[in-house]
Image (tube, rainbow over all chains, first blue to last red; front, side):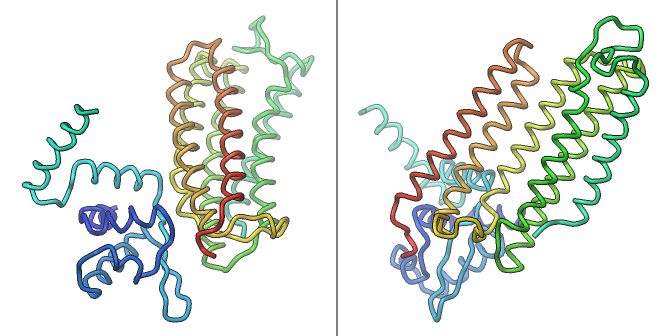
Length: 106
Length: 218
């Protein structure tokens, strides 16, 4: 479970999981969504695989990732996203009034 | 594809349960009327109710065993299913065995628990087992069906289906556990029956929906 918490504590890894909820993606498709070096992303993929949150299947030179989260892990992912675990405090504080203001406007 | 150790353990438990049922019947003048709380209790239950638990066990074992013929896949995927199925089968065997033991103990006057208390804790145990099974479901790998290979879901559709069914199982399991403890006795059966029917309808409808959608893998 420690590996899962470690994997979910990082916003980039959580975003990868959110993208994989929509459909399976290969490393290149996932990389388009992140302004980080491929080596950094590879490290994130390794952590997600170690925590057994994604499944990787290799076809030729392309590695396709598919989501592999239990119901509890999916709930933890949603919770971590809501609370903003791993985000800088300034971002967390900024995000909260924005959500409230949007809610009031509706 | 099947966990032989789990099958042996649950088979042994099934034999114990069947033997206990037959032994209980042999002590009665009429097997159709089993005293509820002690040999002198005028209240009785239909003897067929003592057969329910061994029958449930036999059905669960048959379902576990049938996987060997229904699905196929690589060894690592099959071993995940084997572990999952084996754990569920043994856990179910333990719960069902405990329920039958309490029922027989009450009937013989050895246990003084109220029958609703036993039933309520039985629902809690079965609900938690259902939730645990549902939680692990999305982790299970895709296996190809031997029965209808053309009509089966692809790995991504299976993944979505397993996540949906997993959430349903966890929700239903927790509701059964909580409802078993908190609902008034007359409301338990209709509530749970309608929930199970809704669960079946939702899982079939979602599977049909997925099959109509184009695959993300093609």
